[in-house]
Image 1 (cartoon, helix red, strand yellow):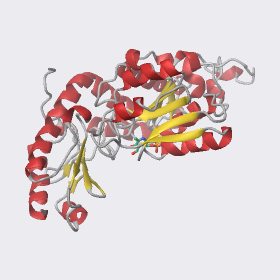
Image 2 (tube, helix red, strand yellow):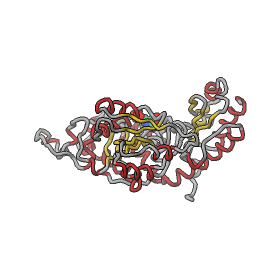
Image 3 (cartoon, helix red, strand yellow):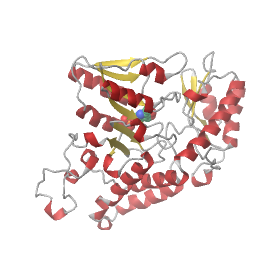
Image 4 (tube, rainbow, N blue to C red):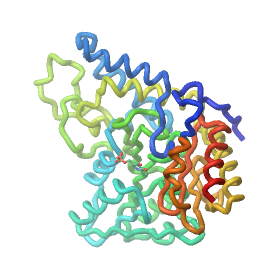
Length: 380
Ligand SMILES: Cc1ncc(COP(=O)(O)O)c(C=O)c1O
């Protein structure tokens, strides 16, 4: 069992009377990231301080840090602005014959559904949705539907609504057996839930930076397996071409790209304002260690789940739920005005229908949990 991490609230700008339990919505920035970001924005007031090297240094640093977090090489990573962009790269490069299947989960996040509906419409493929199993076991439900008809399996590591966990190593193995590509949306897991890349072997994996990577909005990452790195980028940007470091020779047009997955980088990926902010978040996660983060958050959600059970709120079985993620269901529906009551007491969680999504991070302390339960006690 990794050593648990004490509260890191002092590193964040969270007033004592705010209970922010909504990392799955978006994480707060570290105070240091905000300071670095202010400096980075300020540099654009004095553009002579932005050198040609700056077009590459932070991009490569962010790429390398994300790669380290994922257990990949820096060459395997592209910089993308959103999950949808990374998924679009995958959809543009994976081959699907008419009549083949693209498999997604019920109530999957829309960016990871619309992409595949559009591909299916373009190719004559069929999108097949795996329904939520009564026992909450997504892996079993999915494995039962993975056969030779499936061309693409596009799934998360844990379901964004309630943290329902998927065994990606088992799913990856089955995908390879039946000839399906595996596309992973790690938005709600990477940074808080360990992933064994060598065991999962996804074809593509996408992860925006603004949730569990403690980064800014509009800066994310796409892992592209080596077998796909000679693929077709969505756009043709000058910096993705070989030799773009030499600004004096940019019009010696090049057919070759920068190495690895860099060809898939979004245009203007050298985001001088956001990259330094994202880098601070990734450095901090690596310093804490994902194993320790995961163990600490699992301990926090276990306490919340147990207290919630005392109030009659239900969660799925712990072994089928990602440790950092909690979807609490009200058996008789959510109490009236719950969102308003929570907001009044400055308790920030997500209310979705009859369930309450509670996603803490290392900045949450016991006082936050007390504030949440004070509202729930009063409402139930
Ligand atoms: C599972 C999942 N994927 C992706 C996203 C974000 O998608 P995009 O980056 O396309 O806006 C979210 C945001 O809540 C999410 O929960």
